Length: 259
Picture 1: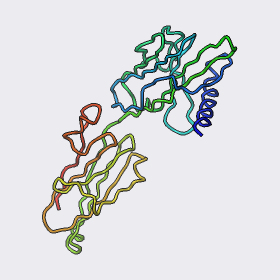
Picture 2 (picture 1 turned 60 degrees about the horizontal axis):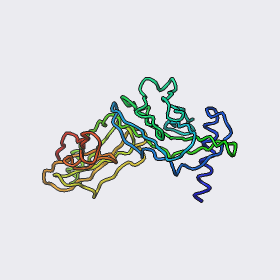
Picture 3 (picture 1 turned 60 degrees about the vertical axis):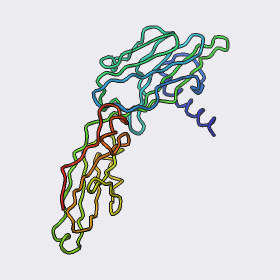
Picture 4 (picture 1 turned 90 degrees about the horizontal axis):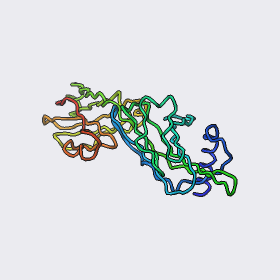
C-alpha cells in the first residue's frame, strides 16, 4: 500500500514538473531528502526552509509551492544546478532569497511572511544518470507552512434577565470572528476554573473565520466568566503559552461578564 502511494505521488510530481525539467526521467521517493517539517509562522515574521541530501553525482535542486485550496497548481520557486547560485522565478524575487546553496543543500528564506505564503512547499532533487540514459527524480514529503494571522475579535453576549429569573440559569454566548487559520477552540472559565459541563461549541463554523460557543451557568452566586480563544499551538494558561508557541503568543480573553 505504501509503495503504491509513493508511486502515485511520484507520478503526480512528474506531471507537475515536466515543464521545467527537459530530460526524460524516472521518479524516486525522497527517502534521501531531508526538508523542514511542517511549520507555523506569525504574519510578518521571516522563516527559512531547509533541504539537503546525501546523493552523489550531477544534480539540480528545486523548491516548489502548492498554495492552499483544492486543485491548486504547483509553482516553481527556485532552482540551483550543482550548488550554483539559486535562480528564482520572477514572482518570488522580492521576498524570497537563498540562505544557502551548498554541494548538497538548498535553503530558502521568506521575508515578511504574508497570509498568501501559506501552503505546502516541496523540495525536489533531479540527478542526471548518463549510464542508463535517464534522470533520477527525488522529491521530499513536503513542508506545510501555516501563517498565523491577526488574533480574533471575541465578545460575550449576556444572558436574558427573564431566563435567570424563571430558570435560575444563564445562557451566555461567546463569539470569535476574523481569525486565521481555522484551528481555534473556545474555552470557558468560571471563577478561573475551566468549565466543560453545559458547554456547547459550533464545530462547523470555524472554517470561515467565525466560531461560537454557549455555556449554561446555574446557581444564584455571583460568578465571573471568561471566554478564551485557544489555537492548536497555544496553551490555555497564559503563563506557559510563550513556551509552547513561537513568538510571545498568549491566550486572548474577553472583558469579563458577570451574572
